[in-house]
Image (cartoon, rainbow, N blue to C red; front, top):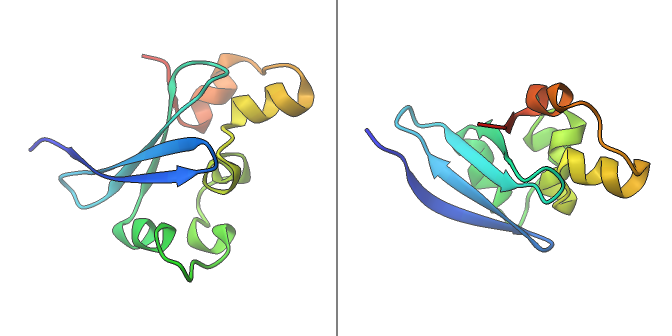
Length: 105
C-alpha cells in the first residue's frame, strides 16, 4: 500500500506534512533549513488528532515519547539543527541529528 499526504500542520512559518501510513500510524515530515534534509517523526492517529485540536494539551503530554529537542518542532517550528544554529551558533555532528530522526538519504 502506498502512503498519501493527508494533513498539513502549520507551526509558525513551518509546514509539517502528515502522511498516514498503511499500518495506521502517521509520519510527520518537517523540512530543516539548517541541514536541508527532512526531520521525520512517527505519530499515532490519536496524537495527530490532538495536534489539530483547539483544546490541545501541553506538547509534552501529547508527545511524551518524543524527546524535547524534536518536540520543539511542534511548538516553535524550529528543528533541532535550526535551534542549534540560532542559539548555539554551531551545528553538532550529523550523527546526532540522524539519531533524532533526520533523513539524510
